[in-house]
Image 1 (cartoon, rainbow, N blue to C red):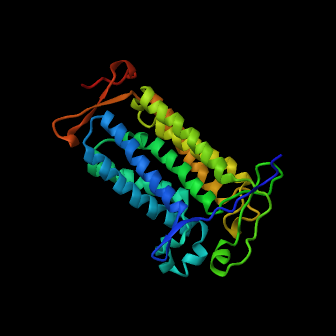
Image 2: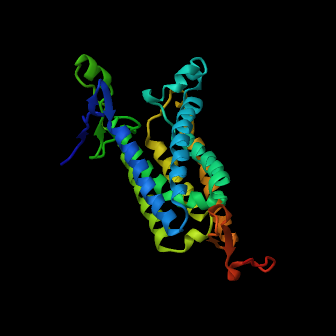
Image 3: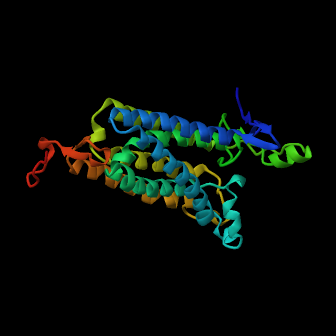
Length: 302
């Protein structure tokens, strides 16, 4: 029987010009590429300009990188970075936080909606949800390849023994130091995100729920951060200050995201479905509501 898994995968895929190309970076690039394809497919179904897709992903790539980096520096290691602010710029050395990336994406979509689509933020969020969920899957798999963000010691047969001294192994030729068999929480999260991706993708392309503006976004927020909240109970603390806390920083930051998600799902069913009509100029597109879904005190517009 399988008692444990010795995880000795090298985080580096290969080296070029003295620089390591890591699995994490590859998975990050794949996530953005697939996200571009899938959101582009959704935009084509909506018959909106192709330029909207390109613009959106410029916003998202910048916002994710900046937001995730600042999130790590502010939420998890401010004591250090407040004394060494120039280190904040060294994003290539690692240190990203998904909650910060989420905040960055929200701000980016707000700007994008104002400057590009002239539509509600919810319209954009609903068409991003499945792409971001799939990106979460790839990013957690990247964490697995990096031997990081794993869980508590376990006696379950699929416990992973991760290497904790990769730099010393590679640079000094030392013997690897393995953890005790531990929960591969990266895989737990990745599988949750993959299931959420499938659900959101099917809901968008196989149902009319996308016209309930904000519902898919709310479902995404609720499911993603509820999964994150519960998995954190078996995940090792990311920073020393979390020791002894009833809820760790990841859980504390997840709670408002879950509440926001619930709010948007309820809000979506209290409002009429929205169908956009594309006018002569892309920025002139206006929403068209279904008569039958209006409450008695609201008149339909055409």
